Image (cartoon, rainbow, N blue to C red; front, side, top):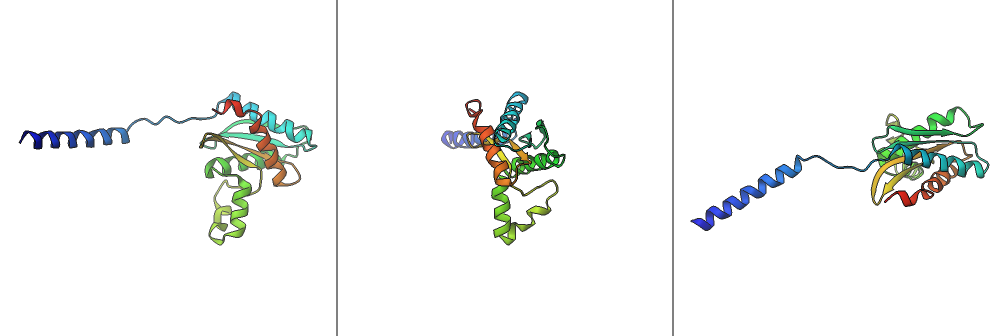
Length: 164
């Protein structure tokens, strides 16, 4: 009888512990203003060195803008394009170039272009700590989305030591 009561008590406590952990507070990593500013600056500097006048926008894990840098002579459209690319990348946790290519090849993914706030053009790259997306950078203004993406990747690479 005592063994049965002990078993029931242990089972009940495990259910309570499981329920308590499911309702607990989550701890998430997110991008700081300082890190976002460094990524934006490094991204714009990389594109400028390559002869491209761009805007880089960095968003946090929720897609909220944290930093924007616009190079001299970057077109006015680059502000919104870079924001939308960053938002899309953070939301989908993928590069916008990969998403664009997927939507072009897969009819089931073609409707991604209809999601409000999504822009499926190359230039949006997630910022990760390990496998966890903590934000994204979007770049607009280079003569091709693949070049925007190259600048974004280079900008993130220059702060890689801070992403641990």
